[in-house]
Image (cartoon, rainbow, N blue to C red; front, side, top):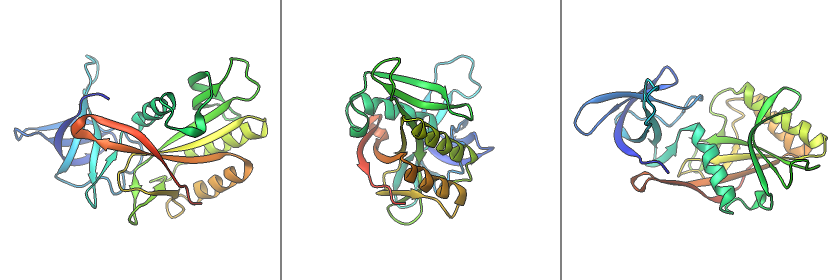
Length: 236
């Protein structure tokens, strides 16, 4: 895990920007890598943590990683971090359902709608039955312990479910993995109250044979530690 630095979150705006306050009182605009609404994940003047890139070409070298949420919980809002966490968890045997594959390929073009699967698992390059894994980052908790996805209407999310169903029809294995980066979430369910189409498509996908699983992350920013640790139930 990259080093994390503490600050206070002032506000998030224009989707991809956030203002933070450093310990010396200065303020800084940083990158906010989250395409969703971040509902229930923005509390003004609350503790947050950010990473720093050494890239010379980035306009905003700092990246918001972890925020405080109502109830004193923590959430990892960097959606790009989710794939890193899942790949590490697969390699270390944490995700029991995804063990036993010799090969892992990232961002493979697939499906009828020309999507990119997050991970393609197989035992050889010409494997007749590979495993297509789509990862979704979950940070929305509304009722205590209840996590929801998505936190905003997601046409892309529904498209990915359709693609996974196509893979099942073709005899492949397809898995939707909810990467839960919220320390208060104990169960995951579709956010029908936010995106009714996604909820309906998710249930259709599961009925068609798409496997739906969830794993929760331990989030310890003071120790520069975020890692998937254990499975959570998915309630449909």
